[in-house]
Image (cartoon, rainbow, N blue to C red):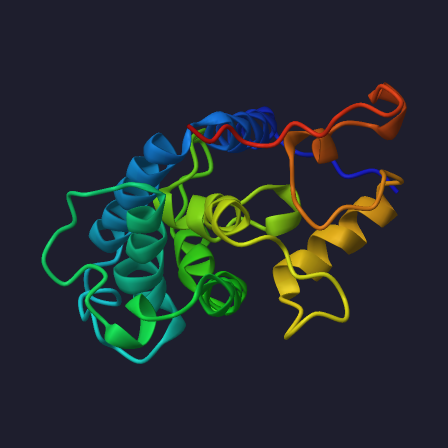
Length: 204
């Protein structure tokens, strides 16, 4: 079965893939700044739904607490009022924060909100779409998680669903098994160099 997509949709997919590769390549400090920018733009895109920093829902927790905490731990220093202020998030260990972030990006509705109002001719995805992008095709929140706390393989405490999805993706795409997304997962397996070192993000 073949799926026919418009040229605009094809360009959008290409731009999204390029954006994920760009974010992945950033040093920690600059990935942190990009995360903050995405969270703030997401709040601007949906001010009514995301206006309460302490709303007990995945969506608000992601853009007000989880992403800013991840950004701060990666080196960001200029946070805005109400960002990363929930002690229930800021006090978490790296593993606990990973599990919380995993739950947020897999349960948030912000990506669906953005797709519901998307201009089909717009090539660049919105901030909400990027933050909620499927982890098996690259997600900047998951990238930050991987840098701060190693993925949790099966058998470890509370194996996070992000790690499991990436592992299943690597198997389905006939790549060497991995729990951590890299841009190589978007490439056909036959294009990979045998025993090639995985291209992890830079950490300065």
